[in-house]
Amino acid sequence: MTNIRNFCIIAHIDHGKSTLADRLLEITGTVDKRNMKAQLLDKMDLEREKGITIKLAPVRMNYRGYQLNLIDTPGHVDFSYEVSRSLQACEGALLVVDASQGIQAQTLANVYLALGADLKIIPVLNKIDLPAADPDRVTKEVVELLGCKPEEVLRISAKTGEGVEAVLDRVIESVPEPKIESDKPLRALIFDSFYDEYRGVILYVRSFDGNLKKNDHIHMMASGTNGIALEVGALSPEMSPLAGINSGEIGYIVTNLKSTSEARVGDTVTLVKNKAIQALPGYQEVKPFVYAGFFGSSNEEYQDLKDALDRLSLSDAALVYTPENSPVLGFGFRIGFLGLLHMDIVKERLEREYDLELVVSNPSTDYKVTLNSGEELDIKSASELPEQSKITEIREPWIRGEVVCPKDYVGAVIQLIVQARGLQKNINFVDEQLAIVTFEAPLANMLTDFYDKLKSQTSGYGSFNYDLSGYRAEDLVRVDFYVAGDMVEPLSVIVHRSESQSVGRETVAKLKEVIPRQNFQVALQAGVGGKFIAREDISGYRKDVTAKLYGGDVTRRKKLLEKQKKGKEKMKRIGKVDLPPEAFTVMMKRDS
Image 1 (cartoon, rainbow, N blue to C red):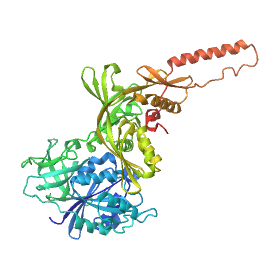
Image 2 (image 1 turned 135 degrees about the vertical axis):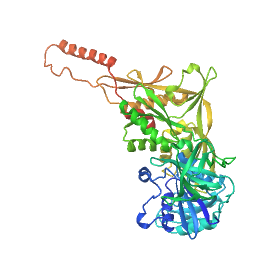
Image 3 (image 1 turned 180 degrees about the horizontal axis):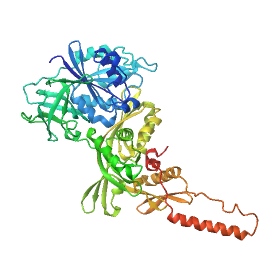
Image 4 (image 1 turned 90 degrees about the horizontal axis):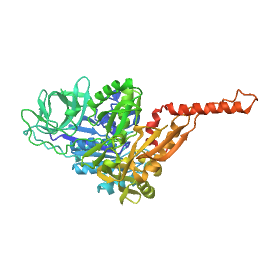
């Protein structure tokens, strides 16, 4: 048992985690050369196309008589809870930093998580073969951050394999062996769970106390669910059944459960016969805080969308959805997500795997509303907001954010934070080049285009990380949008009163570009509480009704034009404007 090492790879998105995992699998002989392919542990096509890790992947490697259990974690802020659970399952972490880009926001966030979990951090400088790499500067940044010695920072190229063997040697040498508690009741941490159509829910676990054998009756301590361990084993990287999982080891359990909501990430597995008294610490229910309406392109697709969401939610416990009915878009669902990347991934998976055509409304966050009667409401969309006269206060979620950028761009970043109604709190300098700007801001203003603006203001060097800090009462109003006099509820948004006019003007101007011209004039309006604050008109097509007249009395010409005018007035009264799907996502591209 002294020969077990449990470690994970943490890094900012696109710093080479999955490529390093590929090299480690190759060097340890876990995967044959002929079966090797890039991003081997990324199983989804979507992960390969985007070049990012969405689902973490554990793998067991044998090297020089040692059992090395590796977890390749996602790098995006949306999946930070998954990363924190993975860190709890390990004793060490490889911190991978790109030698050309240096330390970025998610690097810092992951370092804080690893330090909080009391892990041994091994700094690794990747991509030293790139022409743009500056290993000396980045080594300095890492030394400043971790307080280690420059010679402790390993320099590698995961692509070519240069220096990767030294990483394995350092893991064996530096990562502490797990504490073995075989005689205690079983306590195993679930750090991931997914649904397999043919086998049921499969759990990835790390056993802290006790041993687990095949066919043992198991109990989830947080959800209170019982199940059976139909198969246990290790991943190398395919599933390899074993007789059991011993204390200190990482492995998988195939269960008879039917949904991941029965065994969530962070839950503790114990035995039904010999239950542990206290669960492992740190479990929390992951709550979505970005919501968007998903509708089929026609009402006939409603049932297909429902079935697709039911199946997708079996493997994604963070997905929360409720039915929603819109007069314009028909029947659909309001779905909760962990962030905008999570939303993009779910949308793409629904369109690809279930062949659906979707219309998605503007993403929003949830609001806490206190009514005059003292009743508390949790609002997920602007259309649910009661009349202003009935409301005492509206509280919106705020975030604590961190932007990491070169010091030359600090001014532009602070300006961007102020534009987003944020409060800049602190500026720290990692070294003479790199600055960390900490701030607080309303989440709603981060959802649309903050990240894109940050990238353009900092020439692509800025990176951003955040976590939720609580709800604050603000002067918020609902802005409604009218097309040809009819209110379009899916377009309604909740914004701060000071921003309502600019949001109304921008959105109405954007709608004018997106909505096609009709045979009659169409008025686009934005209003707050029945008072209009912005207007644009889409002029109608004009047919030249007098073209057939050649000469003759002028009264004939006037008569035809008058007839056309009356027809236009009638059309305006009874005409309907069909909104294209792009109209419902104009908020996403507010300034484009």
